[in-house]
Length: 283
Image (cartoon, rainbow, N blue to C red; front, side, top):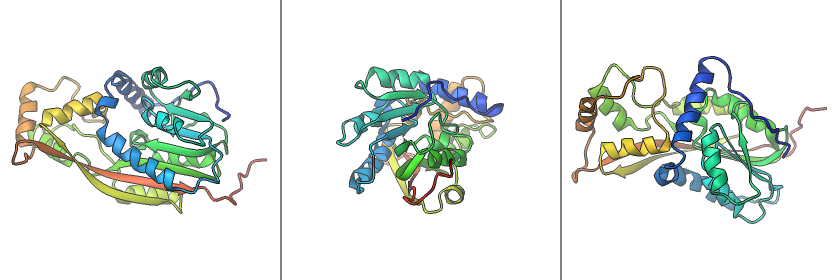
């Protein structure tokens, strides 16, 4: 695959600090991630089914799971017929340690930044990226890197979350603690459309609202914690949230008639194939 052995660092300044925070948070959650990844499995399975339905004669079986986490879908690809060279790349060494421990031999594991991929031009036939790009500082940089490393005829499959995700939780926290943010911000549909269109003009974007049930707001918060998906943006509280505020958030969260709650996720999938006739422009 032409993989470089050394990881590529994040961009400088605030972005570097945030990326280190993200990598550390996911590393801490590596042992509980798969048990809590209902949404991740649904969205990844949607792309996997799409891949299995695609005419694959053009693929040369070099596959990259970009933002592979603990390797759940990397292992799925390892079990598919016709998959040859297979690698998983993630920003978090802790996630990759878990992936390596629970996966069969023969998969390459790479610590790397999706905005600066340590891979050669025209070296990959399929990029599969499940719920990773929303954590990146600049999704356009990720899409440019994916375009760079894909071979002509190669496929890109990306899932992400959009504005409106966890809107019930966001509203409940706003009522309980209006001066601080508690829920990560996501791209609007129009912003994502513009950014994807600027880099991959022929890409297809599919959208869907997914609603998942939880026993309580605390169960939802626990799932997010087990995923390592806590809020890391500016405006968060630096101290542990007081129990009184947690109770107030739970009080404001809308309940179903049976006392359970629902959480909404605005899901988006991006599909793109690099044209066969594209020239690399490299000498």
